Each structure stands twice: as C-alpha cells, then as structure tokens.
Length: 136
Length: 136
Length: 136
Image (cartoon, rainbow over all chains, first blue to last red):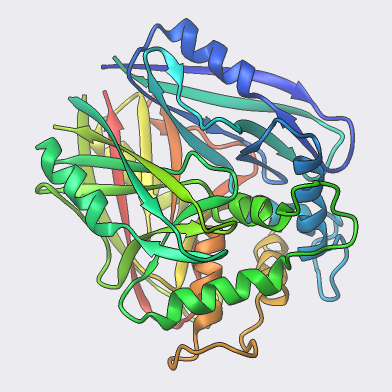
C-alpha cells in the first residue's frame, strides 16, 4: 500500500470559473505508479471548491455557475462578513472542497462525460490543488 | 490491506428519484470479506448523484427532491446547454457524485436513520454505481 | 497501513449552528500516531452535515447559514414529512455528511483559513461525530 501526496497550481481569470483539472490529476496518478486504489483531490481554499461534472460541452460549466449564482446571489440582505465574498464561502460549502476518484489499471475511472473541475467563486486568484493517491 | 472494486446497475423510473441502494452497497462490503475500513460509493454520471439521508420515512426523499427542484428549477433564463438538462447537472454538483462510509466488523456503520441513495435528476435511465471497499 | 476509528460527542445550542471541530479531529489524528494518510470525518445524523470553511472570522459561518436558510427555507409548500424538519434533511444532503482531510507529518493539512465544522440544521441536540484515520 502506497500513499503519495502532490500539489499543483492554477490561476483563475474571472470571479466565478470552472477549470478542468482532469489532466493534472491523471498525471499525478500516472507518476505515482499506483495501479489500483483511489485519489483525493482537495482544495485548501474557503472560497473555491472541487466538483466532477461534464467537460465535453462548455455550456455545462457555464450553466452550473449560473444556477449557483441564482441560488446564492453575491449580495444577500443580512450578510455580515466585511470582505463581501460570503456567497463564495457558501458556494464552497455546498459544492464541497474535495472529491474522490477511483483508480483502476493506473488510470482514474471516470464516467464517459465526467471531468474534474476546480471551481473558483472569488477570483481571479492563484490557487493550489492537493492530490493524494493511495493504493498499490 | 485489501482493495476491491465492484459495480451494479439500477433503472430509474422518473425524471427525479432517490433510489435506496443501501442493501446493494452492504452486499458488496459483505462479499469483500473486509472487516474494518471504508467504502467509496461513486456515480459515474453527470446528471445524477449519491447522498446519505433518511430512508425510514418515504416523505423525506420526496421533500429533498422538492427542495432541490425549488432551489434549481428545470428552466433558468440564460441556460445555454442544448440538451435542456442543465438543472440536473447543477443538482449533481451540489449533492455530489460520491459518498464514503465507514466499515466496522464487516458492516457499514451508518447512523440509525441513514441510508445511501442514488439520486436521479434526468431519468428515467439505466445507471451504474461503482463501489470500492478498502481495509482489512 | 493502520486504520483507527474514534468518536466524540458535541451538544448544539440552537436550530442552525456551525460548530468548529478542527481541534477534536486533530486530537484523534495525533493520538493515532499516523504520520501520512487521511482522515474521514463522518456525521451519522440526517439533519446535520460536515463542512470545511473559514474559521477565522465568525461572520463566515453566520453568512453560510443565512445563505442556506435563504436557499432552502424552513417551510416550502408541498413538504410532506410530518416532523417539520424537511429543510434540515435537504441542507444535510447539499452540504454532505462527511469530509476527508489529508494528513502529513502527523497533522491535518488544511489551508490557512480552513477549519472543520459540524453543521447543525435541526438543533439543539446531542450529536456524535465519527473519525477514521488511515495511513502509516
């Protein structure tokens, strides 16, 4: 049983953005040499998140961000946090700061249409992503 | 340390539905022979999700689906995805495509009222569920 | 490879509350003696959740709870569950009943502003939190 931890950086360009990081995660898994197991993809930020969703049609991330914006608008009466990014913190908690993916034969076993996304809710910023690969 | 991956299929009957899959996950855990560890339950689809919630009273899944429908309605002005199921993609990302459960003494250790559900948001469809059991 | 399961109790004071449990989780990790690996923090209740978000400024948990309350209000027309806490069940499913954190050098490796929270949505109640530490 092996455990390997890696990190990589990304730069986001707008306030809300979904960045496809499937390739970077797959690279970490390949370099680990682990054939069967799983990987945790973890976001160490409180105004961002990790999700798995469709990466074939770019309109899907657009529409997910739109639905989130409609669900939790930037300004809600009663918000107290002086940084003005409370919506980003709330979106982070409902999408969640990590995902886990299964590894088989040295590759992550996503569904046909699935990709792994870093979700920026308070950019543009420089961000980091942690990946832990476990298995044998 | 053992790692075992299994899959099973389910058929959903309506557009939005929560299907109790606790028994199927428990069966995979029992057949693995693993006594202490954990299981990842992973949905390889982008318009569905996995959640853990009450499976004693059938009104609870009904009300969760109703709250999700009210939060993210099927049609939001500005949606661009031509398949017309953007709400299902967004619900998938806020509920999440996987859950993890702990295993003790060969059984999953859910709380008294907890069950594991496959959440369909764009059915009816044939779906698959991946389960990875890890431990000893 | 070691696996250790522990539990601790907390008491919540109001209907909706985010309780910082970072210290308790860190204690379980330290006592496990595990240096590299990960921990699952699992909530065995169906009207509560676990999340990771900012624990530096107390206005952040306040605003997250406010955003959740605005997203899924206590009373939605059509709710059938007679206990009257359907909103709490829905919030539990969108925030999620578990989180996973990475362990390096014997400590959980959260980002600068991250803390682990137990989210109460139907308190006040006595609650339990399960922690499983895995690694070497």
